[in-house]
Image (cartoon, rainbow, N blue to C red; front, side, top):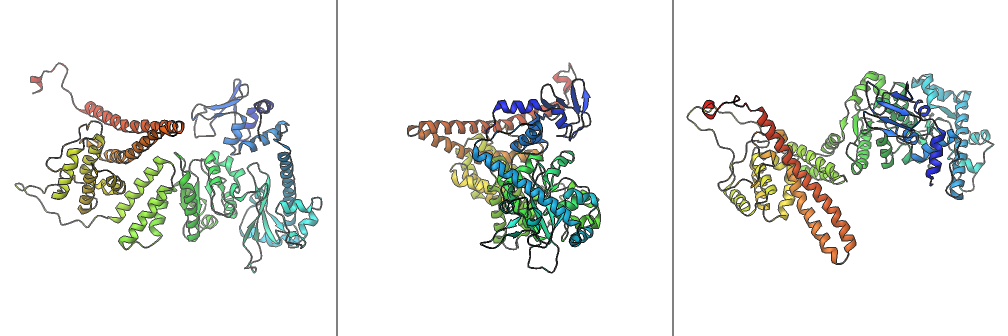
Length: 628
């Protein structure tokens, strides 16, 4: 549906921005504008302003900015069209239909909303009848207060197969079937989908009823599913719906979090205990669309899943969906409940404070991935451990963002190396008396030293030489990057032998050893070591190792970039237009590559400046003789 700029301007002109913002945010007059503490980030003094004259809001703290439509999408979590429709209804404007078919579909959806709301009214009324006693007893057993039951709209679907049809006689049979309320099978008479069940309405982001979840009440019906949801319809799509999002979205703006639990009843239990920012998928694993909806509201939604095996499998399915979509600042956090407990069990046993404590310290996606894969199968043999490593790398390769993929790969392989090559028991320490020399740092074998000298003699590339020298200085990093180094070594005939020698030597060292490997005689330092922090003796070891990891990543990335540039250039003769576009894209990547390399020099210069400023200087006016 295309909306003209003129129509959108008319919509904005008919609404007062402050009145819309004021529904969820307390505003105070400030001259001709309004001010408040920003709803998009935590702050103690107000930096958020709303101007009705200018028609926009702006936060001088976090930079949040937009008009009334942007407010509805960012603060309420609505899609653009849902925001426009809700505002248009308030402003008395009719949203233009793109074509007659779209208008007919919109009219049909509106009719479905009407019949679904009528069904909700009927189910709510049925809960108070004698037939609804079982549903009321179940709610009493869950100890939900009256406010919770009212908010979530619990109802009861009578056992009779034609009860809803009789109650909603004003609606066509076809419409009730289309709404998922009735089932038609072959030539048989249609019948009610929900019978003798506790019902809960499912709402869209605008708070309209779009379907139902229904729980069985007769424990003897063991062959019947415990919960059933409405089928997908024109207004209800399981993969694009999160239960309770219309309430949890605004609540998440205040709490700064969004909690994803397994089922609708878990959401109700959380809300009854004061956790208003909980949502649930519709009986399936989180979909890509649902993840996008969550990330529009918070950067790190918290998966709070049951502590049993099913809960862990659900977490891994969600992680598998999330990995390709990870972006800077967008991730998942994971809370694992105690084994055998769901949110309601934990709250009843230990109180809301126990749940609050778990939500305050969730685990990271990376750590959860590592722990799950490590525990997923026995790890007794080298083959078992190699399988673990392969699974970890496979997860990393699923990540589309190149920087996030590299960082995950590095961190997971570091965890694997620490697990697969644990430190050996310390040997008996011997006291070294004066007059006796301490043992030298571990030497290379004659063959490895020879290959290292040969590769160094023919290769004067600053980056490659610096990486080799850095790995000699920090041998504990060799196996941490063995996968990347091995791939590069197999494709590079100059420095490849040197890297293979280092990998072989590292496998013979004590695991975790940090003593530098002895530099073989004849090995020359890099021609330019001023730009590499990890070659500076005064650098912080942790920072030096991080810079070395970045240098390794750059070394491996460079050949692929150069090969792609060469291939694009070669295509000019046959496809100049496409080749030029590809070359420009690759040149941008090369500039970014050079920038990353330049940052290492900047850090080195900053370290040198800091060292100079920290060193004591001679008094003003002192001569060389005075200082001596």
